[in-house]
Length: 224
Image 1 (cartoon, helix red, strand yellow):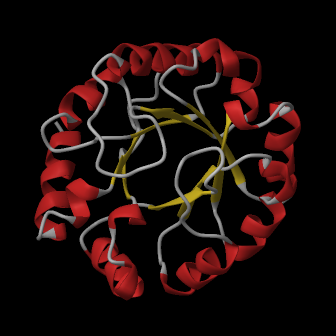
Image 2: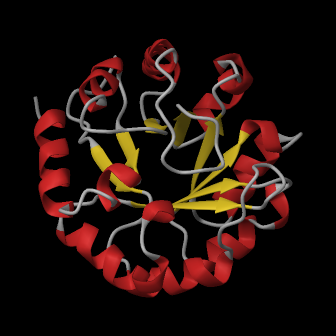
């Protein structure tokens, strides 16, 4: 049965932040009420974009006061788990599509002392993670095709979020359900009702002009 007391979490994605003043941006969203800082790591291979690596995560860790939610959109994540763990990641999420031995990858993360997450792309069915749902701490459902910020939420993913919620409630109630891709003030309520616990929002926060107002409005929606 779903635990109703689970606090909903807002995780601003720094992919949409001003990297020229990244420390200030992180402090600003934390002061505005962020629960996590979502860090998108892209390698230009698994997804068609390149972002940051462990040295930047280590720099962010020196500034951040809330946990770092590090999303590895990279091929062969096993090679880099320890590096990202040592850099200060609190949650490390890998893609089910990016590794041939997902169970081993999850346990590499846990052996590094970090919480382990698995992400699935829009076209990947939930059955891909059914056998390891009890081993993870977080399930991330992508609601856009990963690789770029500012994309539009794929409406058909609402049903998938609901199915993921049912799977978690039935098999692994401790798992947090995170949603990433096109989250805005306009669709947050339906995503919330579908069962999400953690809401990743990039451009809708960092391009809003008022981080505090936007996050407070998001919190109001989640408290309904």
